[in-house]
Amino acid sequence: MKPAVKPNNPNFSSGPCSKRPGYSLEQLDISTLGRSHRSTIGKAALQRACEDTAELLGLPEGYRVGVVPGSDTGAVEMAMWSLLGARGVDILQWESFGKGWLSDATKELKLAVNAHEADYGLLPDLSKVNFDNDVIFTWNGTTSGVKVPNGDWIPADRKGLTICDATSSVFAMDMSWEKLDVITYSWQKVLGGEGAHGMLILSPRAVERLETYKPSWPMPKLFRMTSGGKLVEGIFKGDTINTPSMLAVADYLDALDWVRSIGGVKETIARSNANLEVLKKFVAANDWIDFLAKTPETLSNTSVCFTLKATPDQVKAMIKLLDKEGVAYDIGAYRDAPPGLRIWCGATVAAADLETLLPWLTWAYEQATAA
Image 1 (cartoon, helix red, strand yellow):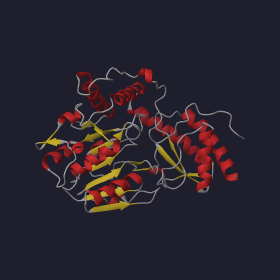
Image 2 (cartoon, one colour):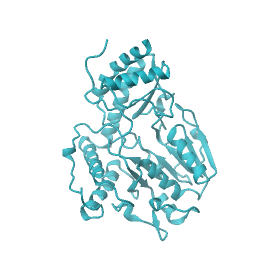
Image 3 (cartoon, helix red, strand yellow):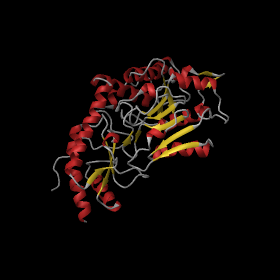
Image 4 (spheres, helix red, strand yellow):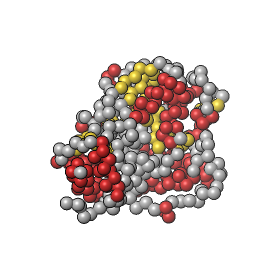
């Protein structure tokens, strides 16, 4: 039968993701609106975004945090264009975004790359990665629902840099910061923030590379992090390369304040894990749905991807039904991924809403497959 109760919040999109519980525009500190981002008040807000991020994440001493253009994509591209070419390069790809970094390194930067590839649902063989080279990988494959299990496969004494696209894992997963030299993410994922801006985190090893190596290719202005062979420290203290949206900055600061208010990153990770458990129980009880991830230790606790015993058209029909009923928005698989569902279960999603959603999934499946 058609369920009677709907989720209070039907937003299960994997980006931009659901706003935090209790979110209201009226709660934002908008004192920076209409002011220059280089004014005292504007720069202070941007500097707080960097400093509060470092504090909440518990970054190691000497790691720098900056706000950069172009969301997570812009942050990754900045790192690639600025750092690659000094050593060989290994790139891991098992979903859409890793595939994009591999394409850019080979087709745009014209680099010879050791590619470690796997199909959707799987990880490449991590033991074959050469850490004498620079290594690029996603911590969590947003479009496949597959994550690396931990950072144990990365050696502490590596010679190359590790460049980690962590956009759907920061604030939701335990990150091995000391094993990562470049970390990127966007506000629109785990914190439910706005798009357009990215976060770039650099280790001292990455800074040393920037100050001792100059790539052979021309460097676009938006990617330049050094001047006269020295790091432009202002980027990591609130002086952004281009003009940011101060409204989006206010929204990000609100999200950081919320994280602090509920107990910090430990709690956001716990909430994401608890949400995943709700979905695990549902999959265990229904033979028509399964996780795209093939092994439990690689199963994402944010962008959870599913395969169904259904045709692509039946999956589309399910998604339309749930959208029409106002039960679940934007839960179709990513366009490059196998047909299926993708349900965000990061910390801004309430477990009660996931519990309420599940009977609707069963109802929609039965409706779509009976047609």
